Length: 395
Image (cartoon, rainbow, N blue to C red; front, side, top):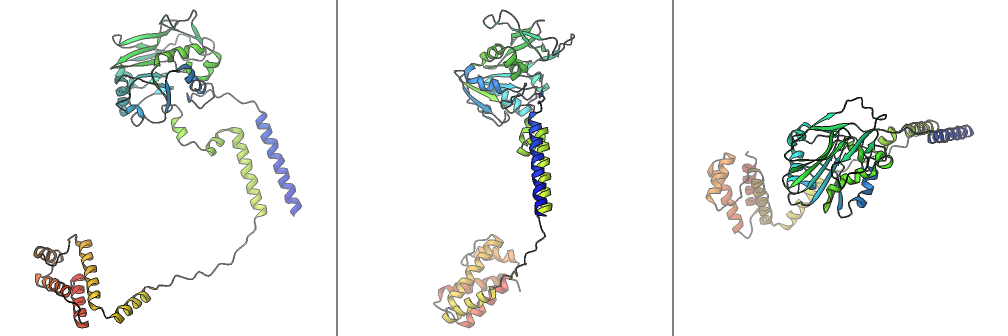
């Protein structure tokens, strides 16, 4: 039986190794999903751009934002001379986040927002509208050609991009807006909107900042676009991304299950472990130990303490302890600070316990009497304890 089990495990190990090697050798499919995340090396991630920011913005201190605008550092009213970059496919901040962003820019800061879809609240606030060039446009067959308006940034030939949606600004407030770039059909794709003491830089072509175009297209276009943001501080936003909700719950197991090769290897590993448990485990029942229940020693403790006080014959000390315990009961249950000499307290206590004032006076007169004595007899002690119990438990 032992040899058969060993042969089975060896065969399973060989099978697992062959499968893993086959999966590693299989050509990987390209992930064309849009993430715009600085940690993703897929075509539409921003790993290259984030890695090169220190070279592009040499005078800026670069930080990263992982929170909503309302809860992040940009909500600091004292922040000045700072630039923010938000690159994503859809930008739809809610009312509180938008208010924080508008306040940030109006204080004298800049914000670059590059997205293919501006949320209605954001677009209405800045008075912008976008449209899509449907003139027979094909992402792969027909490249999108872009150019800057500024002569200092303008290149001799248009910047040509494959796989970019031809989205442009169809309407904007010309009084407060400066056109910074357009496509070959003079459709505006890059604008600056003055807002308070700062400005918004809006781009409708976020894919120009992704790994694919920085590697294979026009690197200069992205760097020249970011040249408008040369402030002393620069914030790279990593919160408003397409995969933000997914990343919150990302775990090692979740990642393994999201990859075909890792997922099948994981299933095979689980099956191997299950087989091992089935063949190797044995039903073994340990002797159940006898559990001795804890001894209730409360009565023994009470008897010991009672014998101690009985041998000492200190009746006044017992009475004092009974008084202190009774006063703690009054304070805890009736929220009245006991004072046997205070007439107002006696009246208030009698009302709370619905007792005759005569009974209450008798009790607290006894308290005063005991505290003035050097000692009391057994009969006085028993009588006093009975008086307190009658009042406390209202017998």
